Image 1 (cartoon, helix red, strand yellow):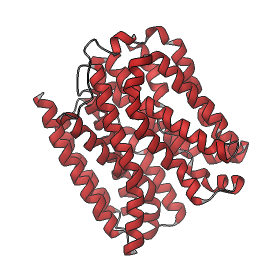
Image 2: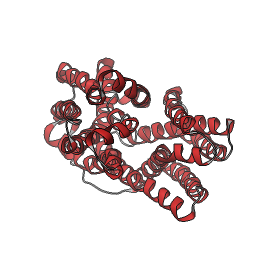
Image 3: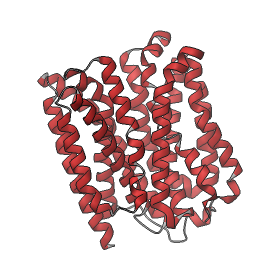
Image 4: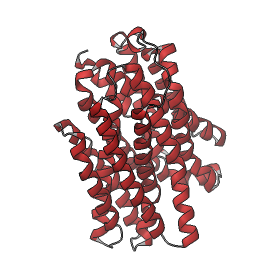
Length: 375
């Protein structure tokens, strides 16, 4: 199919992190106005991750039953409504967060499936573009949410996070006749759920990289402060961590062999982690290197999923299993790292754990790329 669906894919990608990652800067304001505890506030990030894991498993069946077009209309419509209603009160805050998590979970599977079905010759390029768009919009949202709340109030600021979903909904209506038909998406060959070697490795690779990313996203500011950074500097370093991931998404468009990227990823992981221990310039280097590396390995994971099979149904099911595993693990690991810090009164044991996880991620990546090349 032609490039005409590219705007739709990019508009959908704008919504994959925005409504989740832009919320933490508002935690204090939300607590003050809705009188909620720290535990309830933390659910605004944890619940979507759990929804990502559960919703991903339902996505292939829904794609089979409804087709891509109707499901896109449903998910983008839910995103619009949930973002508008979320800040009304405590009940809608939690309910809206769950709906947003479920809708994004479906989009996480729908977009790779749509790319595989409509642009099979440009999978790597399109995956890189949608990863770049996702990171860019998430970084912009995180940066502007507080200024928006200052000017228009926190409820309006939260509701404006649904604006990209509104554009995606309109685009889904506009492009509905250009979307692949249900018969094309659900091929006549009935694909059964199975954990073959490729699917298992994809799930482990996606899980390990998700663990690393969300653990760092959750605890980097606290770790920086423990190693001498001020609170303001730690917040700025987290923004840098997110922003430098944007160009990393473009690396795979230059036709790098996946296997050649893995040593670069391991080097980036370990050098970035080591730089965490050094004050001043070391912190800035760590934010830049870790942010770039985490975005690169995430884009690689998406590409490996999208190119894992020529059959769209297989891609959808492997994507569902891999992302479900990844986000389920990602919801647990930050809690484990926090508990380790509580037990040992130090971040060093947690950093050793992250380092081991990074090495494991690259090792699984080697096995996965080797398996993919043999198929």
